[in-house]
Image 1: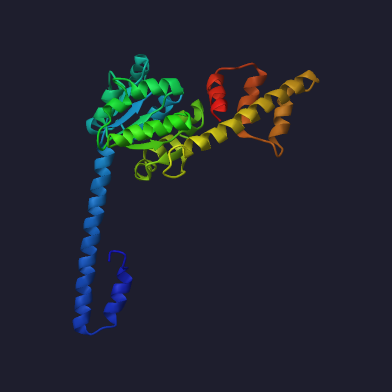
Image 2: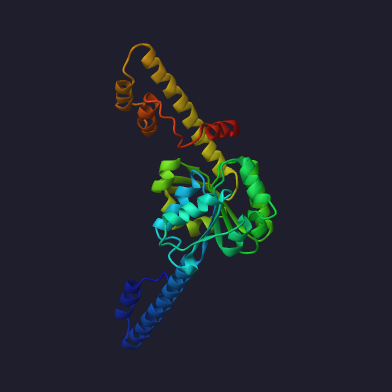
Length: 307
């Protein structure tokens, strides 16, 4: 009924008798009233969701930038009701984030469990399967805080089996789970240009894609309800990235060994069909031996092994 356009109703009204016209006009008023009520309810629901505290577990190389985007984009931390509730294994990272955003409402908890208990939705970003397992399954871990209605969005790159195990455990306790590994490294995390590769609860995906995920990323993809599909997509991306970067490094080394200027070769590569933003970013750093990690090699090796 609410899908009937007002123009259609008014056209019907003008083509009928005066009595029918009056009835149609009454129908128009009634329809407008219903639409206004529905719109008000929708606005109220969005406000309620927006004002709920948001949790974030894990403030490492990636998590720090991601949490910062939730704050800088006004998704969390705007008031006491909308605080960003955080925990990290190294507590000083929490203090540093709080000091970086002194005008935002940030609550530091003693355990991951307390973060989940305090929030409707909690993002988690841990560096390795081992760290994720400890933080998720510990006595004061993420799962310990899950109860009916709680939502977990896990952004780590793990094995399919890890994601599936966590999903089953969260759902068993009445919660919702979204697998959401990201494509991108330290820079994109800080700039909000990550790519989220999601699977699991579509309802939860639809709730977070236009606020939290949009603040932290430039794109979000949903691969279906089967948890593990997002991880498979991420491992395809990272296995390709690893082979590309290895080949690029060999190419630069070969250039230098035969007496070619590597910077000129980077320019040449960037002008042809094999050009890549990754080559433009990493190439100049390789030439000057700047190996400061945006994505540690041990994590790249982990992903290649999982793939």
